[in-house]
Image (cartoon, rainbow, N blue to C red; front, side, top):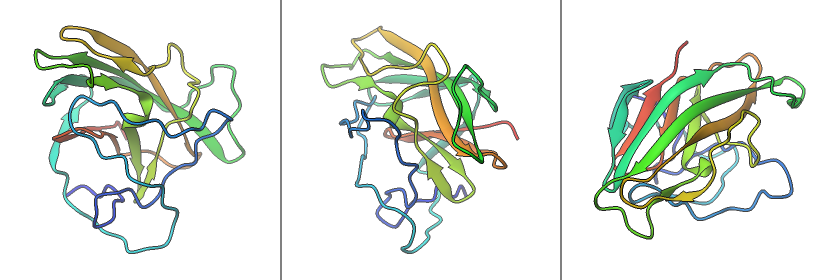
Length: 177
């Protein structure tokens, strides 16, 4: 069982607020059917559903309805010239998504498709990447791939357990502890 910090509807109970003026919610362009949901902060019931996909090791590629995604590497303390908020740190994950034979004009990837599980909380990526080259929103035609780092800001004493991507089926990668 993997605790994603999701409520009964499958939406995250805790989300890290996106920083910066460009903190617009962008419709997720994922490699399959995605759930975006509304932001919820604190409170509410805590659910511990099982993951409706699989948990992979870093470097292992997961298949979706319209392509593949892989998380190659995790960096626990990113210091690429940016300063995190007090009592927090930047962490980053190197990811790649590729359009498969069934990719269409709605197939794509963006940083907001990913989130980290830290305890029972879910942390979402920053609007601007700290670790370069950053993953950018990209439409993926069949055979086209996009790769880059997705940066998160988490409490300094915490270690994320999993990286999730919102696809069907849901895929997670176990992060080194």
